Length: 261
Image 1 (cartoon, one colour):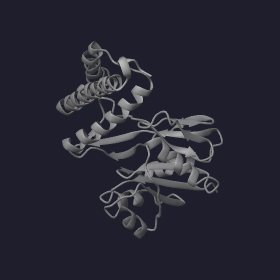
Image 2 (cartoon, rainbow, N blue to C red; image 1 turned 30 degrees about the vertical axis):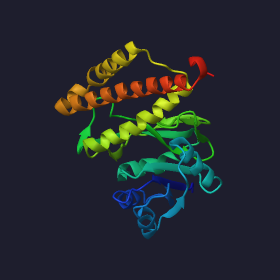
Image 3 (cartoon, one colour; image 1 turned 90 degrees about the vertical axis):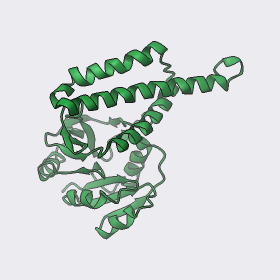
Image 4 (cartoon, rainbow, N blue to C red; image 1 turned 45 degrees about the horizontal axis):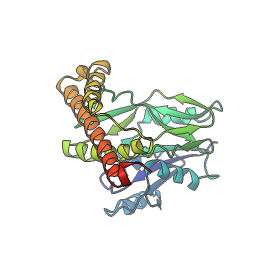
């Protein structure tokens, strides 16, 4: 029988880790890959019987590659689950059935995102496919994408039907704090790609983001909640573009004669 390892990446996830572990009991091995939590996440995970591995965090893509290196030769398939996600019985059954296929090197899984306590289906939050079920020896993460990771598969990708449950942002303050972190990482990657938004783009791209979220991706179907989520993602796009311009200006100021090296 093919061996399946469930991997939970954690950092200070004491509120979530036990329930997450319980949802992946169907796996042959459960590994909590921790980044040095200080809230007892590691102790709680060990108490449930999970294996805990501590590994310093560099970025999301590097952390996932470190997991794949760690389990190399020990498992056939890997299921990545975040601590605030839960695998339903229906999804667990579908995962077990799918890994017997020789055709695919990985599978993407839809997600049900609960934001501020509400299932959010519009504005791009569903199906929100995540490539999380991977053949351990046929997958790597692209290090050029440090956040919003991209998987490189040696083979075809399949799609599962049962959604992963994601208990996403619980409060507005949590949303803003996390989006600020994502924006900072995105801005650094944009600088490496030499993307420099014009002042006009700083104004127009967020407006396009709102139209895309609220109209094209049917955020309007979620009523006032969809409007709020579309406006929040518009703010995130505006903030991200401002950060990129600030990084460019700082780089130019540090360069003699304002000429990039």
